[in-house]
Amino acid sequence: MSSETGQLDGQGPVKITVLGATGSIGQSLADLVERNPDRFEVVALVANRNAQALADLAIRLNASLAVLAEEEHYGQLVESLDGKGIETATGRNAVNEAVDRETDLVVGAIVGAAGLEPTFRAIKPGRRIALANKECLVCAGDLFVARIRETGAELLPVDSEHNAIFQVFENAQADQIEKVILTASGGPFRSWSKAEMANATPEQALKHPNWDMGARITIDSASMMNKGLEVIEASHLFPVDHDQLDILVHPQSAVHGLVQYKDGSLLAQMGSPDMRTPIAHCLAFPERMPVAVKRLDLAELGTLTFEKPDPDRFPALRTALDAMRAGGAAPAAMNAADEIAVDAFLNRKIGFLEISVAIDAVLDQLEASGRLSASKSVDDVIALDWEAREKTLEWITSRRSSH
Image 1: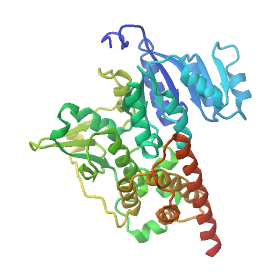
Image 2: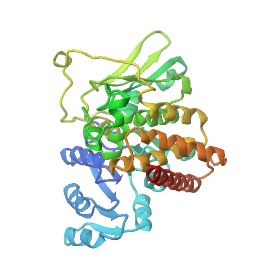
Image 3: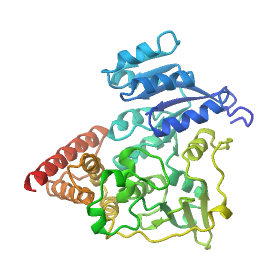
Image 4: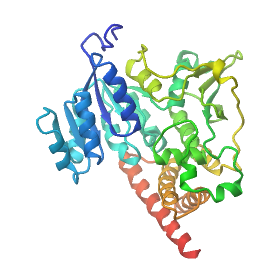
């Protein structure tokens, strides 16, 4: 990569395709691209249904193509981009065509299981995949990593904790690593009792102290399910055993990840809690690019504190770690059940602590019916995802009718 232009192999600007362009990752990426117009060329932007946001982003970034997955609001996209010289398309085939266009780097940021198919399709020889979609590794990690290896594509983690570990994980010294530690803010309920959490409202759970994220990931942070999912992802991203993965609650969100080596060295990546930093690391890798984020001032911060997570108050974390150890389809089923249960909580159909109860009940059902063996394809993963969602909806309906 050229140090002057950020070019790959000196062949011009880095070509980027963004899956899930209108979400929080896409917005942070847009800021970086706008500030570095000569370094990047936006090939395609893909969004689910927010036509106006997609159109605005396509204009800002001078994208060649804007694709809306859902066809219902496509007319608005076409109208908004009329005369702008930006190609538009809609539907599943259009998403696939966008993924197939020549590009250097694909940012996989579609939220949920909907991101599985297009992100898998994006893995092609010579490409970089900047991964922000949790489901690819949580639900289909073995399949995804195998595909990366088969094609020779390069996988770069966007998530702040995984990117932090990536920055201090010496692959050549992997056998010298004792432990990989992900940090967690503890969310808004870090110091709450179980009794207090039982009565928590969606508004309280959505008030994350440090990060500005989407609704589901914010609720998952409050329950610590998010950290459990990240540990599962880390088990696929880094060549370490399950018992080498650990979690520390770190309320200041200044240290994002740590790697402990056999000689006693503990390497940490630190920075302000701003997603533009890890995204920029993926965009410019192996170089670094200027990012207009607040610099971490340790003197101003004053104190860094760390504590062990409490699996009694945050049972979702224990559920996630058990699913990782069980392997097979357990993480995929757990993730699907969590998504439905979180939505039910946000819509005041169940209480905050019932999210974990719902997930455990669905996993027990699926295990009893022999449905948690390893998936052989992405289609298998998607089928199980739907089954777990249906069973979670049934559990919620039954729970409500019995109260």
